[in-house]
Image (tube, rainbow, N blue to C red):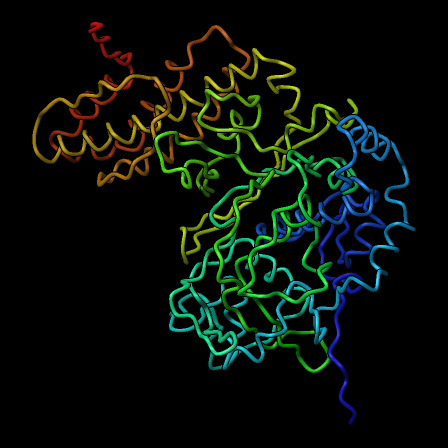
Length: 529
């Protein structure tokens, strides 16, 4: 029988899950844009893949609409986007088709010369592929034990190409550090690169969410914030193949900032007809360190006393953290006195038509990982419309939200500390814990050896959330008192049994509850010298 060539087009073959009402289907990139005004939202089950796809789609949206023109003034840029958001028929179909039909671009996944988001040289530069389990997040690979999965390297199961592309995006944006499969470039096989982690590894992203996918794609295009230098190209627009030893291209807007920062090189090995992927090459992409760039969907923290290269860093994802605890970072306007800055994309939302701005929600995509190789859990959440509470529109409500979030975080840290002190007192005998730290800024939740700390925190946060929403409608009620009460209630509930069984527990818990209710002492100011 003749050999069927393997082919799959990221533009025209279905691989992106979308939702319209209660109906779900898969589309390629072309139909995603042609039908965007009829689609409610993406429905990709892998949160970090959806996060990566939104960045890819934002860059393509800018290309199709002309919003990637650096010559546009801020007023011209806002006017053009305003006009597009008022168009009932979605994206211009001629512009969409012209982009995806452009012969200079390549969306073929198994193209031998320019496979989409892959490096074709890996087949000759790597001695052997990495194994299909290395591609799929959740499968054990290499020497890892298969405790909760039927998959193992001795019996590799191919992956449908649609699913493989979603995992491809996860590796580009959230990939682990480490060299991966050894790669030889020319006559050299570098041993000490170490492999850098993906640009979004262990972060949480915040994406404006419109009433339709059309609105979502338009409102999440970042503005140009610096002078453009060089030609801006996405990887599938670059005629040159990836070069691991070449200097990194300038971080131009919007293509390279959103799609050109990957530290990983992959090459998918197709099945017999391209409907599935049977293996993958996965290794490092470049020998050069990445250029600094600010992702527009991340909260950026600043640490003034750190080294310059470590001074700015993104907020880490935390699968145990509810979305309302991020509200202060989303609603407060940029201020040099604060230690964090909201995502840059939120700076563009005040210029939207009112009917769009007031209905905007925020989608949260997080991947709780360590900085190197371990993956804990990915998560996603959708907020209600919250932009009416932004500092630019309701400064009092924004300030109240910031106050309540800070107080909730502080008392979570205080609860952890006092639960640990109470356990020590129970085990070692009577004593009085002390907590003289002021309520100046939120305390971090620190690990504790106390068996009471984790259950108490788990019981505290639902109570704290209830108190948070109640406090927003009661501006005269002190936030500190409400969260102290929630912390005390959680501590009592989780230690009720031990207070009966253990001799000194009741006294220790009573002392901890009293400490939770006691106002923090402020340190006396030093006399001027």
